[in-house]
Amino acid sequence: MEQSSMNDLNGVSTEARGALIVLEGLDRSGKTSQSSRLLSYLEGLGHSAELWRFPDRTTSVGKMISSYLSNESQLDDHTIHLLFSANRWEKKSLMEEKLKSGTSLIVDRYSYSGVAFSSAKGLDIDWCKAPEIGLLAPDLVIYLNILPEKAAERGGYGGERYEKLEFQKKVAAYYQILRDASWKVVDALLPIEEIEKQLQVAVLDCVKACQGGKPLSCLWSS
Image (cartoon, rainbow, N blue to C red; front, side, top):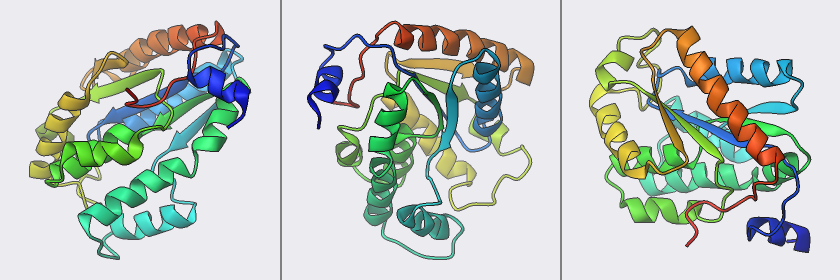
């Protein structure tokens, strides 16, 4: 790693950069819709921004994950967890490059999803977190909060492997364990426009802080 990058991750650098904004929540909580709206909002204000999604199904690892999620293949729970993690790691360098160039990234699902979903299957939560340590820490995590029963009522529910009500209840419980100071919890049952307004305020504040020199840090590092 270059010295400038090391300085940044150690909290020394004060150079302007883009913000890493992550949207999390249960399936059908509205992440995809709000992610797209946030991208349009930031671009409309003249900010450089991109929308990313994990898993990124375009990579070689992502294609294996996609096959699994659509029930076309079977993999051990530990194996699929490590594939999800590898999918994030293969984008880390590009993510850091984009942020340092001044581009803000709006990311639909990140490490929190990986840990919450795998823990809900019965894997040890510390084991699940271990391969994520060292990835870039989000500057802001927006958690769209919805009861699993309400999410199950939304259109398209049940199309993928994990969209099962009892499983989603377990996922919700693990999300609460993972919650930290970077999180903003928003009621996903509010009108779409109200959610959008709340997210815009939080995201704009975050972007300004990063432009002001907030240093990058690593996820779950001691």
